[in-house]
Image 1 (cartoon, rainbow, N blue to C red):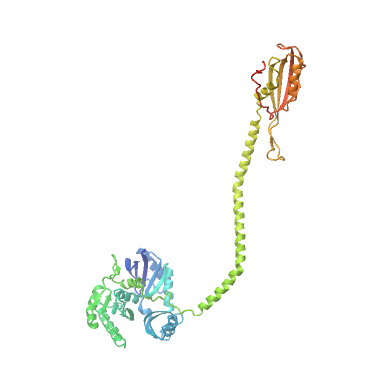
Image 2 (tube, rainbow, N blue to C red; image 1 turned 90 degrees about the vertical axis):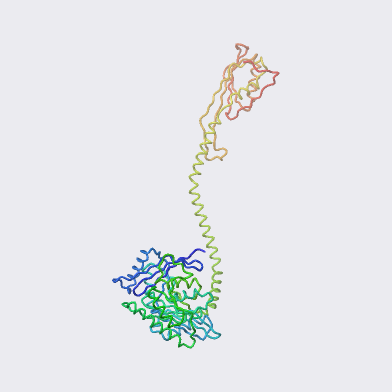
Length: 506
């Protein structure tokens, strides 16, 4: 599981404290800490100015902005332990709110109230309830907004101090007193049976000397302990833990141990917190606030307080679902038709686009096809003169009866034609006429006439005499001249005579 990075801030009265850590399984690894006194010119009541200053300090320390947990001091919150006559978890939020509102020292209008359950019997539940004034909550939100931060949780710093002690107790029965001396006031958190029992805070004057602070710690510890001991259900504790400056807390620890008569120590290390190179003297409670979620403890969260259950939610949900079902039925056909229409519109757009993209290529294809057919028509007009000569020899009399003196041909071709009105198979044409003139001599007129009749009867040629058939041949007595006219496409098939007949003399 990847480590989750978290940031916690404490906006004290005189100092900003921050801790950035990675939470991985059950170990908290501290990346960096920040402790910075407010400058004299800074007005902490001006949320815009304070937020911008906080953003600058985080940027200078290399702390990235994002979601953040705010830890509030005890003095800003009213905290009470209440025993309520119910064990119904749905009744606890409203019952806690009504009980807390009766004795709040500030206006309950807009106050944020949250709680955690610490004990229960068959008929009662004991909760630790906390109330935060609306103006304090609004102040925190405005500072976060001005600093560019998103609020993940707003909790109590004292709950983080308690979590440090609870994390050391594997059985969940921790009992001890935690003294937080890391800020302008000392906070006391008493834990019994693994749950927070009481918390209180005491002011430490700013100009106090070392001895005065130690004296204040001892005095306030005695008061806290006496207040707890006179309670009817008070229980003994196992130890006391101090958080804060080592020299100061070491001196106070000896006196406090004798007052409480329990082992007392200063927290310098924690098995579930890896401080790395960071100095944790004034930061321990902030680390403890992150331990709460690490240990799956109930948390006080003023940003997301527990709310009373909506008892008519199920009925309202069923009515809404029924109405929604009817609406879905009524609109299903319309939706289907709309979707189908949209699909058709999309198809039209797609086809139009495809048509526009394909048109130039198609036109190029048509043009090139016309060119090819035109060239093919030109190339097709190529008379087979040898076939014509072969056709003439096929109808000639026996060798010795006819002598051909000359064979000349010409082609009358006036170009390729295209008829737009004709079908595709007949649109192109290349009309051409073959004209052949044959001069020769025959043994007599009857032989010449026989040759002429054979040519006239041919389906290919239109035959005519271009000169007078009369005696006067040089080799045979009777001379003749015939003109043969044929379509260039009607080329005859040349067929050889029998080898016994031989070829006509030339």
